[in-house]
Structure formats: structure tokens, C-alpha cells
Image (cartoon, helix red, strand yellow):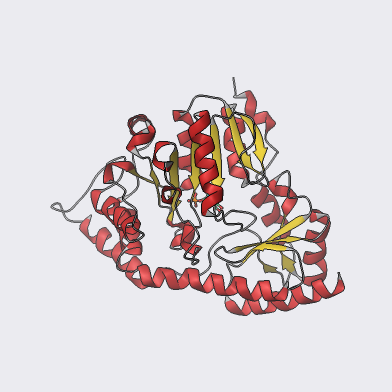
Length: 367
Ligand code: PLP
């Protein structure tokens, strides 16, 4: 017998549908699926080579990794937080192959219940919760009156590029504390935050360690979408640390030694180079924002995503594709609240961004 909830999903995942449509067109600049384009810093690939070499000697060979991660990488993560004046203990860090799978698995620690999702939303959140049989309710920005068990927050947000302020996040921590909910905070895009007053971590908010878990990834932070590495921080105060350790030990055999050495390098010795890549994408975003001047947009600052209000999202998606040779993502694919928007990402080479900006200017002029 299959899980009946699977029948509630749409027939295919948003990004594979869009990818197929765009691939069939010629001369399209593709700013749809949010995948990185810049290569890894050489230091990171050298770390991989060194780690691989260790594996061919009996004295340095390694078998199964510890399921919560190697200490050397957990220390690098703890340092990454301490550079932002946040204290995270190595026992609170769990290494993963990325947020998509880890957040999905984390739902198995929690009892089935009501989950609040941002509207519009990253489709994987909705689908993971539907499969688990959770009741899904959408929120806009502020906490609702009703009581929920789980809240998912993404800041900087995908798809809207919106960044929550300290006050907005504090309201959510107060809400979670008062109703006994758990916040699952998706920090996939924290490395794009450059504003000094913008929170990069939920743990910058007082009281968050009692009610929040933070999911992080090197996918966009360090160009690891293909390498696959992330980490989840589960504070001891939130009461889920031991349970998560137990689930991890029965559901995964961890992340490879080579990958964790690469990730360690990316967050330490190669971090300046890694940050140059996120700065490059942010510069791309500001060129796109310039082209959209006068339009109704969010994001593009402290975020690689731009969310443009344009009217019927599928109609405008096809117009941008067929008349302007530009691939974007129709906002309707991100569910309720996205029907009048398209998402444009800045993960492209500069020449493509300059050409895309020109096409966007013409699109805006003719609207
Ligand atoms: N969370 C958000 C908001 C994302 O946009 C993405 C990828 O696009 C992910 C998680 C997936 O991250 P990972 O590659 O770590 O699985």
C-alpha cells in the first residue's frame, strides 16, 4: 500500500516542469531555476584532492563517517557562527547533504500537526508536509491568531527575496514560545545578507534557542549545489537535540569525508573567495533591479532573487520567454500569493545578466 498523501502532490515538481519548457527554446537566457554558475574556488577542490589522497593509504583511510559529522567540520561551522558573535556548540551541529532532505527528515522528529508555511512558498516545504500528512496553513508575514505546531520561516526568502527584520523575527519567536510551536528556520541564503541590521540567523533573536532549529546549506553559500553539504543546528534548550541525534543515527550514514573537508575549507581558508562569489551574484541582482526601475519588486538586496509583480504569472512567463528570450519562474508555481508575480534569479554570468537586463528594460517599457 502506498502513502495516500502522495496522490495529493502535483504530477511533477515545479522546477523540472519549467526546466523542460525553457530547454526546448533557443537563445534563451535562463534566470529560472536557482542554480549557481560560478566554479568553486581552487582551494576547495584542492582540499578534495588532499582528502581523496588520504583515502588510498591504510593509515589515513576512513570508512563510515560519524552520522552527525566530523568534528573538524563542526568546529569550522561553530567558528563561522562565532565570527558573527553567535555561540553554537559542536554537539548542536548536525552535518547533512543539504536542507531539502534534512528538513524533510526533521519532520519525522515532530508529531503530525498544523504547519504554517510562508505564502508564496518554496515548493519543497509544502510537498514534504503534505507527504507527512501535516495540515498546511499559509501565513503572510506576521504570526496569525490561530495556534500551530510547526512554523517554517525562510529569510532571505525564496521566492520573494524578502528579508525579515529583527522585529519581525522576534514576533515569530514570541509566537512560537507562547503556543509551544517549533520554528524551522531556513537560512539557505544567509550568506547573501550584507546589511548590518539584517538578521542572518534566527539565533540572533532572544529566546530563539528554546523554540527554533536552523537549517543551513553550502549550496548557495559556497557553490555546493552539486557537491551537496549542509548542516542543521538544533540547540540543546529546544528539547529536540537528542531525538534528532537518534533519528539521524537510524536514517543516515552521514556525509563523505571528502565533502566535509571541502566544506571545512569553504567556511575557513577559502571563505573570502566564497564570499566574492556571493558578492558577484548580488552585483548581478542590482543590475537587474536597475533594469526593473519603476516596477513593483521585492528582493535583489541581501538576496539573489527578485520578485516582480507583473500580472498573470504564466502569461507573463511565456511572454518573457517567447518575445524576449528570457527564462524566469512563474510565481503561481510557488502557490497562493504568487499568481501575479515572476521570480528572476541572479545566478548567471555577468554578460548574460547585462543582456537579460536589456531585455527586461524593453519588457518593462512595453508593458
Ligand atoms: N531552501 C531553500 C529556500 C531553497 O531555495 C533551496 C534551494 O533552492 C533549498 C532549501 C535546498 O537547499 P539544498 O541544496 O541545501 O538542499
